[in-house]
Amino acid sequence: MGRKRKDKIQATIKGRLKIDDLVLRAKLHHLMRNFKDAVELAHNLIRKDLDDNFIVKIITSRVLNNSHYAYSALQRAKLYRKQPYLKLKKPQLYSVGKSNEKGNRNIRFVSSNKVLIKIPHTDGKHEFVEFEVRFGRKHLPIVEELINPSFAFPAGVKVDGDKFYIYVHVPTEIYRKYLPVVANVRNNGKYVASFDLNPDRICMVMVDCKGLLIDVKNEHFPEVINYSKGKAQDVRRKALKKLFEYALNHNVGIFVAEKLEKPETKSKNKTTNRKISKFALREYLDHLKMLAERANVKLHLVDPSYTSTIGKMLAKSFGLDVHSCSAYALALKYINSH
Image (cartoon, rainbow, N blue to C red; front, side, top):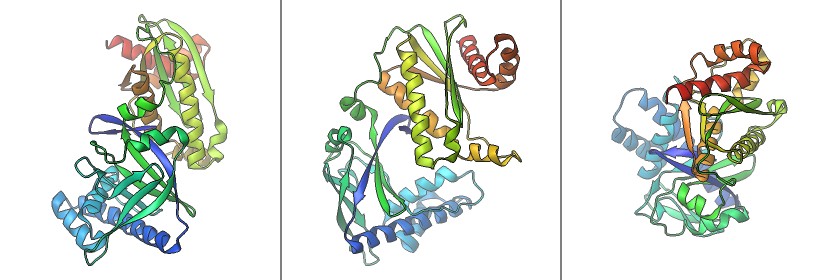
């Protein structure tokens, strides 16, 4: 998957922390609980329209005893700035990258299977604690690049049950250096592929430069509404990758997707609300951006206004489902604007 950082797409790799020592586990978990509280506090202070530097000072003195963790908590809180109230469910930890301090001030790799995490203390005598970490084999060369790097990398820790996971955002060029392009790319691809992204399906159409419909491909996965967040996310990513690679290998050079925010759960239907609540459009788009980066093709996000209405009209004429026709309407909108 990928995410956008200061107009640059970064890939995310994840490993599992192995913590057998109960004292070290308690130290890390305590820090993560404090960080969660710091994010909630920062969110509250942001809504009071306070200066960022002042917010960092408050968080440092009251909660984290570390200005860099405090600044990182502020950046996390800004992700939720549109929400009137923030109550996080799980402990978390995040540290913004720092290129002049071995890539990250508080989370540093000393080998492909060992990472140092700074544990702050109220007396100012902070300590780096070493943890064993296990990444997938294909990611080990990338982790090697994170040892004393010349570039910044944000990193964090999440907890799932009794398991701790570390995630790192690395520059696309590093990720692409060790992992192959997703398909046999044709740099002169003349077709356009457009996506309609939904909680339980992805619909893709391929058109030529004049808007003539070339192909329609759909991936359905209604079972994901009963899956855990992680498992559902994995299913969606694999489905998106499958369609993306199909398009690449069938002469597509331009990709189009909807430019949308996460839909609101306004329906009275509980099943519909459940689907929407599990629908992470940001994850879809981030992964699509990463696939496009790796394949060196163009991705355009288009305003989808009226495409659903047009899709319903086209469905009657084309004999296709509404979602596929919405994707077609989005492709036509892109072509007409270029």
